[in-house]
Amino acid sequence: MNPDTPWQAGRLDAAPGPQRLLFGQMYEDAEIERETFRGLGRIFCIASAGDTAMLLSQEHEVLACDINPVQLAYARRHANGAPRETGDADRAMRFLRSFAPLTGWTKQRLERFLGLSDPAEQLQFWRDQLDTARFRAGFNLILSRPMLRVMYSQQFLLALPPHFGSILRGRFEKGIARHPNAANPYIHAHLLGIPIESPKPVATDIEFAAGDAASVLETCAPGSFAGFTLSNILDGAAQSYRHRLIRAIRRAATSNAVVVLRSFAEPANSGDTNDAERDRSMLWGVLDIRSVNSL
Image 1 (cartoon, rainbow, N blue to C red):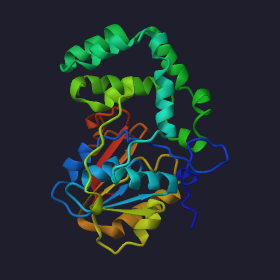
Image 2 (tube, rainbow, N blue to C red; image 1 turned 180 degrees about the vertical axis):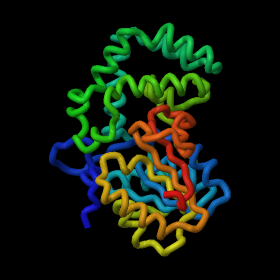
Image 3 (tube, rainbow, N blue to C red; image 1 turned 45 degrees about the vertical axis):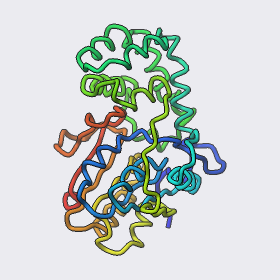
């Protein structure tokens, strides 16, 4: 069955060709999942680069699935001790960082900023020395629709809000005002490209499954999972796939199961299930944490 999701192509762009490694590391704060799922049973997650599965395997049995066989094979290698590799999303982040010197973002200035631990001081530094008119203009240009179409398919771009550069800067500023830089590995990865340290997995407690999330869940016994973390797999997916995935989750969930879902989109409302500002990666518009019964 066609899963009706752009992730099936195994590519971020719209070009024909083989499936590729997209993520060498994950830009999702899996500590949120660790806290959310603590004390629960078996967990279902999207494999991606393997980081979330690896962290959760320290306390849970984990089933990690991915629709992209190249990505799934990498996650399995990574969980078994192989070093990080570079995916297409990581190359896109590196491309963005290459423009930093043109905006006055020298390595020395960024290192001073990243060494700060007081969010109020960080915010002042950001506003005074980094969030300049030149940076804003360049960032908005790079993240404009015409530029993003070079690297991303139209289906992925549909999930992004208008004026994404301005929106993302706003998310970044909120994160800076909340999370101490010195202890935040995600901001070090974003600004200087320092790899995020891999969790120490219990690889024997991770089962890897090939396929899209709905298809894999449809093969699992009812009541198999107490937690689901789905990354942003619904970004760009058709409404029919969303409905199918929800049905599959409800069938495979225990009565007290919890679901975590991220999105680059802006939240449709200000509901109390959105906790995006808590994610130290500072990229997400939606971090929806809710009971499976409220899906």
